[in-house]
Image 1 (spheres, rainbow, N blue to C red):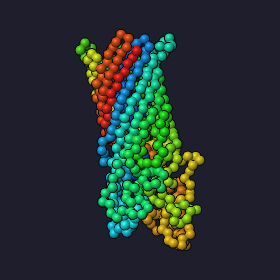
Image 2 (cartoon, rainbow, N blue to C red):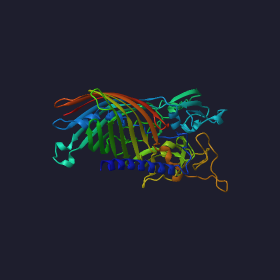
Image 3 (cartoon, one colour):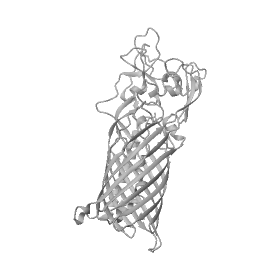
Image 4 (cartoon, helix red, strand yellow):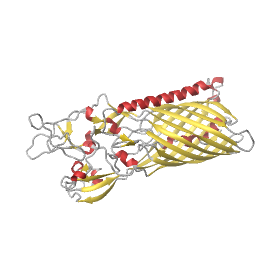
Amino acid sequence: MLRKKIALLFLLSSFTLTTQSATDSDTNIGCRCNPCSDDIFTAQSFMFPKPVSFTLPMRHSGWHNMIHNRHGKNLSAVQAIGFYQGSMPHADNARYFLFDYKSCLSVKGDDRPDYKDRDVRAEWIGLPSNFSGGLSICPKQHQAGFLIEYNQKLSRFFDHSFLKHFWISITMPFVSVENDIQLRQYDIQNPGTGDGPRDIIQAMSQHGWCFGKIGPSQSRFSLSYVKLALGGTYMSEDNFQISYYSHFILSAAEGDCGKYMFAPVVGTNGHHGLGAGVNFQFPINRKNDRYDLCLFADLEHYYLFKQTLFRTLDLKDKPWSRYMMYNQIDRGPNLSLPGVNILTREVRVRSWNFVDMTFGMRFKMKELEVEAGYGIWGRGDGRLEWKYDCQFPEIYGIAGKWTLGDTEPKTASASTIDTLADNDKDADDNDTFVTIKPQDVCLRTGADKSVINHRVHVALSKNHIGEKIDGMFCAGAYVEMPQRNSSLKLWGLWGKFGTAF
């Protein structure tokens, strides 16, 4: 029976990941505004870095002994973890947010003699026509906080053979997240002198933009989520350990509102979810009184439910078109609107699922335990859907040229972030207003992209077995290397203590 349950868990996880991959492939059809090459994504407006509280070794190191071997009167166990996770510079992260696989962009106005070599037209972001400069970014993040987990065997309250090995637990992480996209400008010439923005840094966070700003460092602190789990310990003898659990996550932090690019996100970004996990350990050396050498493997799977959130989008085949200017069909000819205000929409977000897997070796000698392992944290592509009652309104068009005396707004639908095209004309060569339709909007721009993080970790634990109370102290560290630029290059530390009574 046990073997069937474990096999079924792995089959379900494999099926979910396979289905997700197939679904992600379908979303790529017919939209080339956010291409990827050699696992490099570009022109995205949203990144979902790995939440620090989902680091599997941090939660299980040392703690696995208390779950399997407690013998106190109450059959209860508690652990408290303090942790820190920081990012390291990774050049490809800039390409994730910028476009055309570039790590820096040039900004020039129409009056510059070399304007054809630019990446961004200065006038689109409110800078003067004689402006010239460049921008670069280098996203970084810090996460810190503490986690409390309580675990209770059900046999403490129910004298039934079926419930003998079952337990329940509750986990609550409190996390502070600080994000800094580190916007930099260089080679600034002829900065603005009027009421508008004077340089690139001011332009990318100007007051008229309600969403999509590229601004200063920001931080958030919140209870991340509440996780409830029901599990069973199927084997716990002579360093053989097997357990299985199912869990439900109730998000306690609000989702990203879309005001800033690379804004801090706590926990699951407002998504509730459910999942399951398994833990294995078995000895590989002959039994002796000096030491034990064990192999271990842990696997967790989470499925996140749909959530309604704000995401900033682009037009298809027009990267960074969110930073262009737009006209509304019933407004005046010179009353243009910033694209971030109309292309940031409330959409239905499917973040699907993610998997955390780790395996390695444990060396045990009396009360000491040294652990080293390798793991993968992965997540499939997210998907955005229009809300049933909130499709994109067909009243906007890319702003065209206007002159004094015009009474109607003009559009130039062939324009891109680096070019202002000629005004749209009908068959009789008269000005016509070309509106943006829902199918012209690229939903993939605002989706959270797939992630594969490779992790190595080490941990040192000291376990004390008492007559009535057991104790545990543990410290560890890890480094994560992203296979794709949709995640950050990370390192982290943790320290914790636990007790069983």
